[in-house]
Image 1 (cartoon, helix red, strand yellow):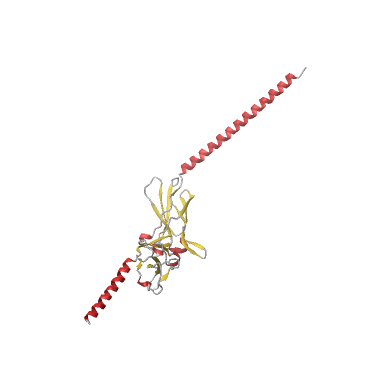
Image 2 (cartoon, rainbow, N blue to C red):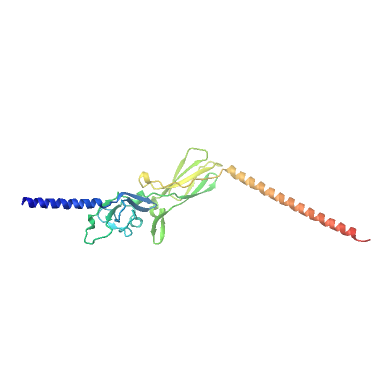
Length: 284
């Protein structure tokens, strides 16, 4: 009886060791990382090179997991979840499961390793790219900064949504500007994509940049990337350009008149010479 128990124990230990060894030989997804720009959200991972495949699921409550239809038994080490993470203002987790190349349908795939990501909230954590701006003078002390939002990676009913479509009233803009030659910067916060900046010194050049600003987010992700810098010209430089253009125009006109006069004079002289020669050759 004791020897039977010993055999059973050895059998159980051997079976457990076999399962553990097999599991250790199965590559597991590692270094899971969320990459998200303008709400285009991708989960990435690393794994040892092998013939195994990967299936991606996602959940916002750790209970109800949904398969990503484009990421079932894939060989790639990333999965685009952009269109599936709705509503946007929720924390989602991803589950990357390793699966064999050839599936035995009697086999329980849950025995293969799973790797779970950290939670990610697209609405609060997706990075925002730079806006586009133009700067127009209203008068000598005011300018209008016009801001164009970047498009997101989300499409609805055939339309590619803009940043405003998703963030709505949560989207504001930070405008940073300074006087040319000065180190002091000023910031304005605007609710609108058409922002007026006033109280500028007349005749001075100012440089402007803008970025999407989302104050409802954690501080580390409130600000999008800055736009390119645009500067207004100095009033004096405008006058200089106008004066230069004026004198270039006057010079061109004078030269044109001069050449016309010379040409007419030459033609008149030729006509007079021809007339004189004709008269002198006629017999009396």
